[in-house]
Length: 182
Length: 112
Image (cartoon, rainbow over all chains, first blue to last red; front, side):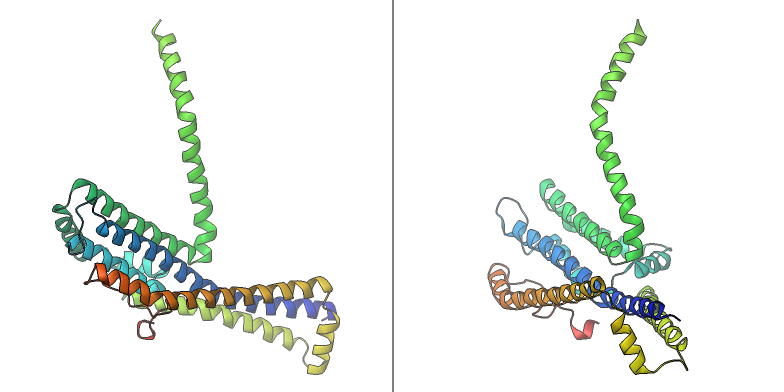
C-alpha cells in the first residue's frame, strides 16, 4: 500500500470510529434528552391546565392523574423506546387488544365527568404526546430519519400547496359550472 | 418480549458496527505486515496529514467538547432548579406524581 493510500485508509477508519461513538452514545442520549424536555413541557401545560380556574379540571381528577402518570412513564422509560421495539410491539400485539382496550375504557370513563372543552384539551394533549413519541422513534434512528423525514417534508408542502390552490380551483369550478349550464 | 427483542436487536446493531470498523482497522494493518514498524506507521501518518484535514479534525474535536460542556451546563441547571420546582408544584398539588428521573434529569441506574 502506498503512503498516501495508507494515510487515507487509517484516517477514514478513525473517522468512522468517531462517527460510531457519536451515533452510539452522544446522538442517542441527545434524542432521549430532547424527547424528555418536550414531554416535560407538555406535562407542565397539563399542570397549568389543572391549576387554572378557567376550566373544570382538578388535580384530584382521574383524567388528570391518568394522563400525568402516562406522561411520567413515557419520560421515565424514554431511553428504551426505539423503532425496533415499536415494530416488535406491533407484531406482539396482533391478537385481541385487551390491554389497550382497558386503557381506552379507563380514559373514556375519566373524561366523562368533564366538560366538552376540558375533554378536548386533554385529548389534544394526549395526541401531542403520541406525536412526540413518534417523532422520538423516527429521529432516534438515522435510517428512519433519512427515509421518513423527506417523505413527511414532501407531504407537508403538498398539503400546503393544496390549501393555497383550493380557492382559485373552486372559482374555476364555479365559472365552469356557469358556462356549462348555458 | 417485544422489549427484549428490541434491546437485543439494538445491541447487535450498535456493537456490530464497531466490530465492522475494527475489522477494517485489522485489514488496514494486516496489509502492512512484514513491511513496516509501529514507528514507521506513526511517522508516515503525521507526514501525510494535510493542513485542511488537521483543521477539520480540530474542528470536530472542539465541537464535540463544546457540546459535552453545554450538556453538563444544562444538567447542572436542572439539578439547581429541580428542588424548587418540585416544592412549588407540591404546594399546589400535594398528590403530585413524578417521572422519578435523577436530580440531573438522567435515567435512574435501576431503570437502565
